[in-house]
Amino acid sequence: MKTFYIPATWLSQWHKPMISLFDYVPTRYEASEREKQIRSLIWDFKAGKRSKQVAAIVANKIAEKFGSFADSIVFVCVPASSVERTERRYREFCEEVARRCGCMNGYNAIKVDGSRMTIHETKKGKSLQNSETISFNADFFNGKRVVVFDDVLTQGHSYARFACALEQLGAEVLGGYFLGKTISYN
Image 1 (cartoon, rainbow, N blue to C red):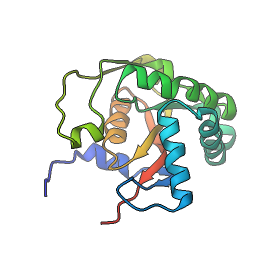
Image 2: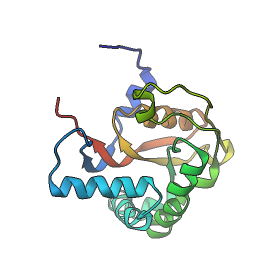
Image 3: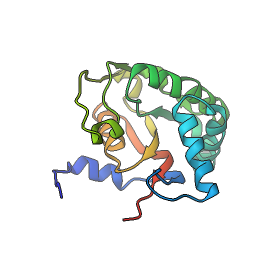
Image 4: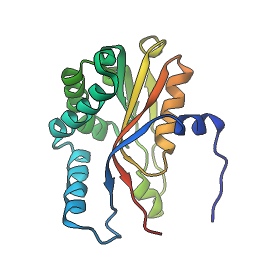
């Protein structure tokens, strides 16, 4: 089994609220009809579909948690594996979440260049040809309270790395919301 160093800053992110809306059962496991519906929702969302449906769910959770203080937080998403996927998946979604719960939309305060391998591609032994660079509008995030969203929580590395980058800019990351949390039956 591979072991690697986990930065203390990542551990601190993992101690913050990490709210998963659904359990995600990978295709390698037998799934119930309900689990298949959730899988389909997640896949559709990742393909840039059903964003208004997911935005309604996320906005309701943010409104439940923060109430009238929702307007004082920034909602921002961990970028997808490419500029195109990030745009397709998150532009309208972030706008809709902000509209529904009154939070600030952080979508335009980050810029993605290049691409990276998805977790599924790296497990299949593909090699990295490009590298992804994420640029942040430091002035925008400095002093802001931020909620981070990612589509699927598997190990939490992407979330932790992204949240730490925001905190290096002076943001206070309050926690993360995830459409699905990968379930493993090992």
